[in-house]
Image (tube, rainbow, N blue to C red):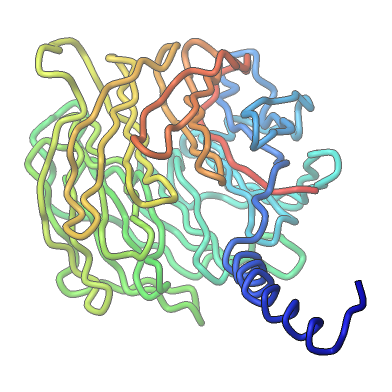
Length: 388
């Protein structure tokens, strides 16, 4: 068949929509990353753990391949990979001798090299995060009830602190757990203008103005929102978009939903729901909370009931509807992580020394164990790094 100019033009017209759609699809949704490094923080005191463990993780299958000890460290209970992918930071829980550690990260091998270590400026740090510029690390010190900000220098080392704030106020009624302030979580808001901190001892979520140029914290107005007495707020999850905030309370085994005013930095309570079945009466302490990347589902872990509570999130109201409790396949799920693709949930069972992998149903939010179980001593946190 002879291709005339008229026929060629007609064929190009037919092909154009497909080419445009193909280009649009590529632009809107780049190929998902498949391979990751996964770093697990642990407790080393009274366990056989050596510190931080590394794994190669397949985001398509949810399978792990062990790489061994990435870096020896004392009680690195919470770890966070820097957005640059070049560094990893850990808090070291050691009472009055607690520290914060900076490591150089070798992406090809998963090995960590200690760069420097600074005093945590408080007792028993249990959480570390980065501001949205990646220039500062924010730390919550549990036993001393304070929060600190450290600058991240160009070589990855931690610099001298730019902020140190002591939590203060009325204590909760549970004397054995709320005898003083207990900072348990701190992160910046989506726009980096505020820092939210959960204090278990005060039954409060504190709100600070965050100065991203100086790394400083100053009280917002109002300075906090108080939860029901005896709740014990532990961790916070922020829904994509930043307009809804969810607080898991350790002592009451509840999740409280808030609407967040992104301009004023204020919180308005929407509802509080239990993480437990109605007929459960045993000991329980909630621990971790996370929103699925789609923004459709929320998960919270129960230590005692040994389960993950699954909730649906209303698309516009931000309120929660309980869906199910799913057994974690181990004891004391202190932490869990949703992989970056939103395909799998990994429950870290601290006292049974394992991580159990669950497939996430994207339509229902349901969790199904895959059969993949990773043995690791005293796992208490997990962080991902995409690699080739």
